Amino acid sequence: MFKEKALLAETFVEEKDGQWSVFIEVLFKDSSVRYEVGRYFTKEKAQIAANYIKRCANRDLPYPNDGLGGCC
View 1 (cartoon, one colour):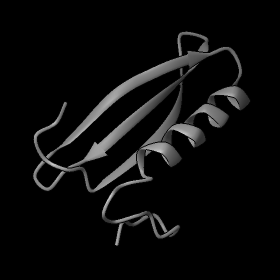
View 2 (tube, helix red, strand yellow):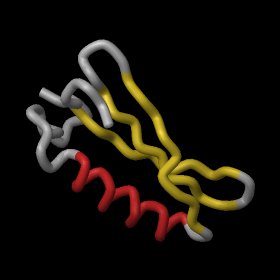
View 3 (tube, rainbow, N blue to C red):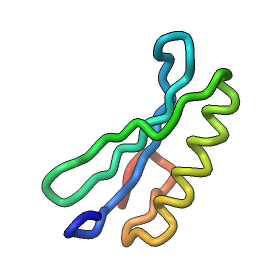
View 4 (tube, rainbow, N blue to C red):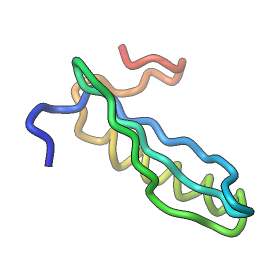
């Protein structure tokens, strides 16, 4: 799908049209891409989905999240 390898993936939950949307933002060396992954009726379900998506997306990346908000 992408020509270069991603450095970091992050997920966000936002309220949109009365539902909760999950977004993923993927960081590359020179750009970033943001996609809406899905919508959920409750914030809790959206946060659970965002957590799963983030863990799966970062599983094979070269710079795993350090837990402090940075990638290195």
